[in-house]
Length: 128
Image 1 (spheres, helix red, strand yellow):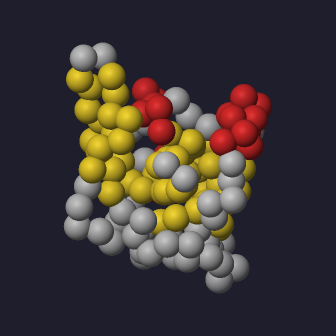
Image 2 (cartoon, rainbow, N blue to C red):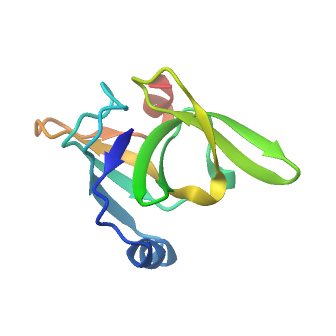
């Protein structure tokens, strides 16, 4: 999994979501390579589960971990939304409830210091 530093707490996430701001988190895992490498930073915007589309990069809170993966498919069952997601370098996908969503990646800041990659519009869809 492309893991985000686990020191981010539930209270901080809740406060951030309520303010509607963006936040920057540093990644540590390998599952989103080559799109996101360990040490890259992701800029997140809070988003509700029903706003997420196929191809979006989304950050989830899964137990104590914060994980960023790509959305493969939205699944609606009995009025509840789940998101089928997987890392770019991983072979398996699995669903998570939309309530686990922390935010959508709107920009990737490369650790190399090269230009940031905006993850909005047509450019973002070309990565899907």
